Amino acid sequence: MSENILTEPGFVGWPNAYPDPPYIDHPSPNAAARLGAGYAPSPEFRAEHFACSSCNTINMSGSRSTDRNRLHAITGDPTNGRLRDYDCHHIYDFNYDDKSPQCSAQFILRKSHIASYNHAGGVEQYREHFGHGYDNAIEEFNAALAVPDVFRAPAVPLPLKEVESFERDYRPLPGWLRDIYLGGPAIAPAYRFGDGRLEYVQALAPLFAEGRLDCGIDTVFRAGVFGQEPLRDRFRHAVPFAFDPCGNIFFAEGGDVFFFDHETGSCEGVKAVGIDISIQQEPGDGHTYNPDEWSEDKNLLK
Image 1: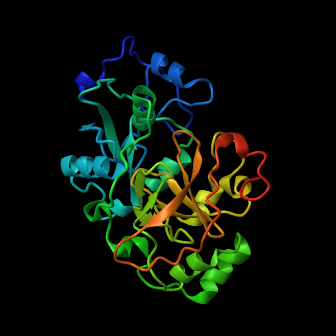
Image 2 (image 1 turned 45 degrees about the vertical axis):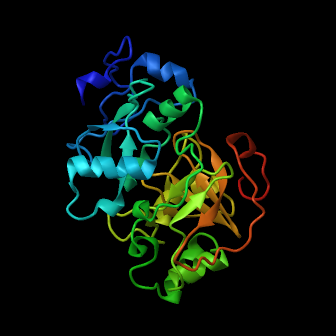
């Protein structure tokens, strides 16, 4: 990691800061204190234990998709052609520079990234410092930031028996999402928040992980977040179906889509955006969820 990033006073080693499996210790105790007791320290993944790239300094753009592209420009593809299965992970070492915000970032296998939740990172530090969310501007859809359609739909339509098997093991899919897995139209390339921000879709989640390096909906359902019950139990009716460029998760419940931010724990309603594809998302009620509602809501969450 670049030495000019370590600008926070009192940055010191913090042994055994993160639970097994072993990670490089991040961040400084002073930085962690800003986020309160509800956050675990942020990991930096080590290649001797994980499928990941080394860390590199990136200029933070305010866009997760752009940050991922910037990291890709530095590292190339270190994943033997499987980059779509990797997340861009922002390290919790934001430099607190108003004019030239930077942090370290690395590619980490999505399955391992999700297993490390909960953690904060550079995006949350950026948001806290500047007082607004990442992707703050009211943006127009940028086709250059959208991944190809093949990343947003199954390469081969799934057989009906596989979809039915998933629904028996877990829960029914919303009709529009079921159609996508059975070979219908691709999902939207991006989703818009109520304040105008955009977040792009990096990959459609397979129903079942096919190999040990894969991350499917079943993988997400088994993952525990915040040291609590697995997502399958926290989300009573919702189904995770897609990932953004940095490991956040899009959930569908009926006609509604929600964006789960793994750094903040927020779960916010979003609307599909598209320009050249038919989007079959059903009308939703536009409800927005936040962490305080999770334990009380009787519909989406337990």
